Length: 136
Image (cartoon, rainbow, N blue to C red; front, side, top):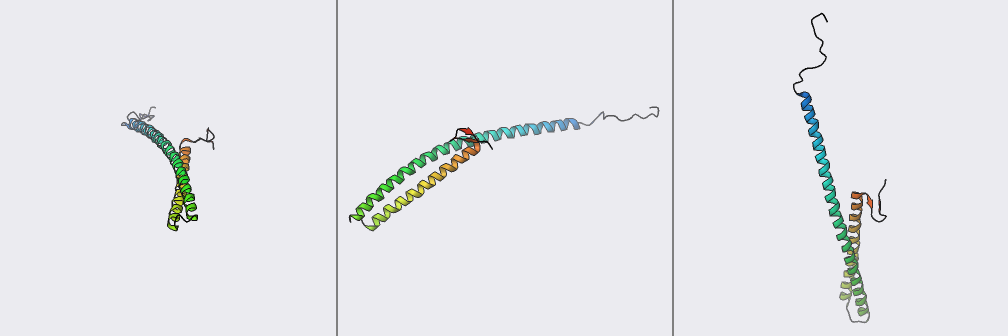
């Protein structure tokens, strides 16, 4: 190397570029870890809320079933009274409307229950009827 020039093999001073890049990478890693933890907590909260919702919907299905039985019994009794001439058409029509409303309410309660149940399955990837994980 007699020409008097020194080949530049590496930069002696990088003006903090490597340190800044390292700090940026560390910050991104911390942000990603924080986001994963937040997502885990959100999912856990969603599961707990959905479990409570499934329990509530199950109770509503039982209540709707009892209401339907009561409305059906009331309609049957009113129909018998109507046949014997002890009730008028308005009374019979009202009993029939209560019965139809109870049927609609029961279907709605069942629909809400199953929607909540399948949402819980989706969140947990677990089949609670078969008692096994859902595999794809």
